Image 1 (cartoon, rainbow, N blue to C red):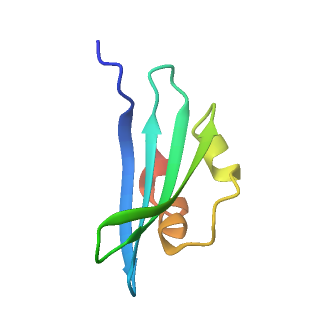
Image 2 (cartoon, helix red, strand yellow):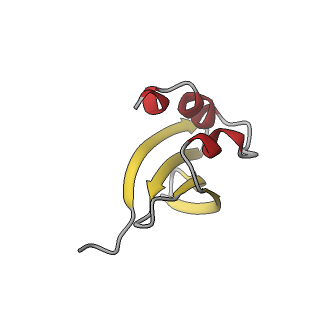
Length: 82
């Protein structure tokens, strides 16, 4: 049995010298962890990373995410349909 969390959503976007990533992982215990990161695009080096956790998939919607395009895409995606 694997101990690693399963990635169930990923998106990335670029603006100027920055790359932004947003991913959602489902932990082995069924909880969710969303990770929002800002990267230096040229160096491919992470500059900032924030984690958000939720007991339920629906709880992910209530998080206080930064106002980023990748977050908006996630909140409007078909991730919520399943």
